[in-house]
Structures are given as C-alpha cells and as structure tokens.
View 1 (cartoon, rainbow, N blue to C red):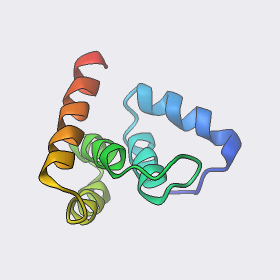
View 2 (spheres, rainbow, N blue to C red; view 1 turned 60 degrees about the vertical axis):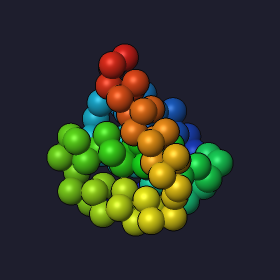
View 3 (cartoon, rainbow, N blue to C red; view 1 turned 180 degrees about the vertical axis):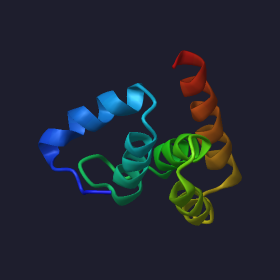
View 4 (spheres, helix red, strand yellow; view 1 turned 120 degrees about the horizontal axis):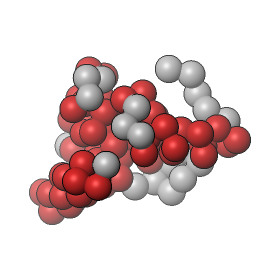
Length: 89
C-alpha cells in the first residue's frame, strides 16, 4: 500500500468511514506509528481489527504485534471501539 501524504489524510479518513478495507488498514498504520496523528495503540488496534474483519490479512499480523504491547484493558477498549464503529457504520 502506498504511503499517504498529509493532503491524503482526509481522503483516507473518508474512505475508512465508508468501510474501505485498505483505508481501515492505513488508519491502523497511522495510529501505530504516530504518522500524521498521535501515537495511539488502542486506535491502531481498532482500525487493524476492522481491516482484518474486511479481509486484510496483514492487519491481523499488525493487530497481534501491537496487542503484545497493550494491557488487557486497552485491548478490551479497542474491541469496544471497533464494535461501536460497526454499529454506527
């Protein structure tokens, strides 16, 4: 997947709101690296989880890697946020 520049951030966020798997994955990458957004492993886990649910195999690997750095409470919060996102979208 191509790296996004700052002007593409809004585009990727709009695509993610529509459920585009690659956009969901890209948001996970942004949040786990702190690239264009603040570093947030809970948000990254949420976006990787949603991307994985939509068939992005690589998202499963990233989700697993960052989960090893998170507390059970953080993982539970990320899962809650993913469920909420699914309910709304």
